[in-house]
Length: 243
Image: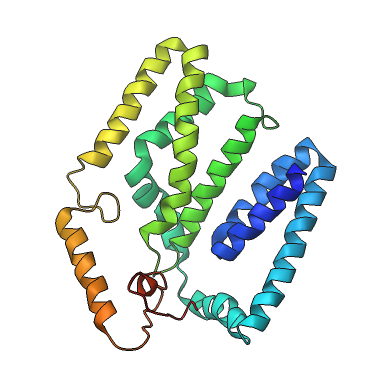
């Protein structure tokens, strides 16, 4: 039952945002190492739902689904930059989560070390975190990439970071205090970073500009198409290309 539910959740994630495919291989690999039959069941449910959902959406959208989800990304793929992918880890990921990444790395190397169990829950979370890193870096190859691609990474870090600190407090007490102060430093960086980083903690002025923009859209007659930003129009009560 858990394997079936996992397949359903993965399928729901894919139809929400197709980049969820980055989170399929490694967790499924972990499940395969634990229980091959459950991994096959999960993969079969996922594949079946993806096929059924694609057909249903293709029919209901009169063919626009495959164009918008597959044809457009393939056409835009010619501008994909592999150097941007390689540069994403130091310039993007570490810029936001540098302290947290250091803590998790030290936890895996100095605290768990040879005791690390890939087949245990910590192995699953580690592979999920690695999937989030790969997803964020891969998306940076797209010239239209935005900071919203960091959201899965933020979720994984928010789960793994306190786990690492808690586990260290039980296994390496002296190192735990260093980790605890590291968490404080990471939070302080988010709250008082001298660099301007959009989409983290927007100022009152930025929120006011956003409100004015939504009001401007709401006052426009008819529907609105904003390329690559299908979520903005519905905030103003407009239909967009995503419909």
